[in-house]
Length: 411
Image (tube, rainbow, N blue to C red; front, side, top):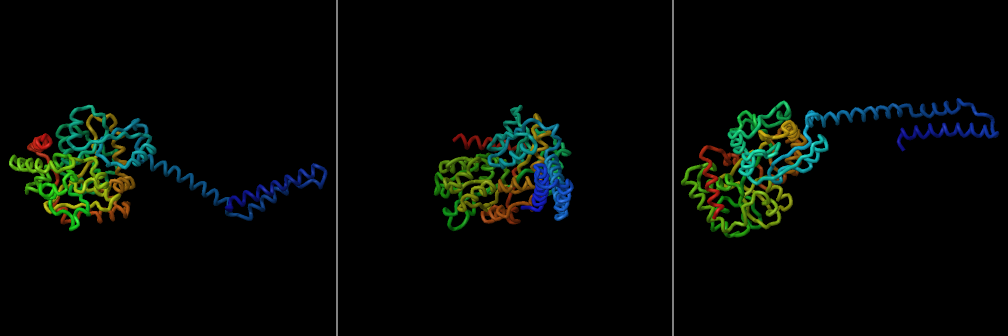
């Protein structure tokens, strides 16, 4: 029994005793009891535990103080409730948002979030070009942001509604595709390389993109290899293997890449950007052209899955939060962006996606398991790996990637 409960019990007991004595007297037994006896007994009980009532009052005051503080924190993360929309519609990559974050946002801010999925930047761009998409927030990669800005499809951000933008690593702001971050805020970043099953590669990770582009090598695992269903990533990797830049637009380079991809195609299981983590996990695929965080997700369930950047290099990319110019609920989208950039929410996000966070304030909050998994699986980026990574960039000549991709897929 707690001290507070003890005090209350003593008070109740003494008052009950006094009442019992009074009732006995009324029944003609003992002499009438002095009414002051109960009061004196109660006072004595309180005096026996002099600090207990004060402690109880302090506890109640502390609880009262905590409640407004929690409410204030939620309000800070939710902006002005009077301006929030009844719902938020987002268009995102597969397996790229912890569903608990969406639930928490609804519980804290009162706004349910509906999420639709796309497989490539090109799918997203086509959707926004068509107009009236109904989406409030989309997550394009770097070069796709550049395209969407040039097409007038993104709204300028009101950064006064996104104070947590100060948490972002300055090295990941002001990049080539949006130098002043007028239209985009970093979401997650990662790399593109090769995922493999260690049992199929007992001598160590594949050292070259030849593992999936040289017909003699890829066909050793015929039916158990996938490449990304992404024109810039897949053609870019083929160009890299052939000795060109990820962004080369010369007709000669693309003719070679097209021939290479067509020769590779018969031994592939699929072009897959959405489910390769699941197929790696289930060992239905033993070699995959892949994004780092998705491979980490597969490794979290199957330690035979690992990742490497081939000697020729790979891609580095950053996905971003942007608002379509015709978004119905801009303010609520900006509040959600700010919510994602909260240190705790940012850490929760990367602990779930296994991609890298651009949020410096989130880094100390990442799980130890997160770092252990990425290090053991080969996903961490050191100076040597970074020196071999290339950004996917856009130019007026980049349309050739779509032409090449159409020719490959049509075969």
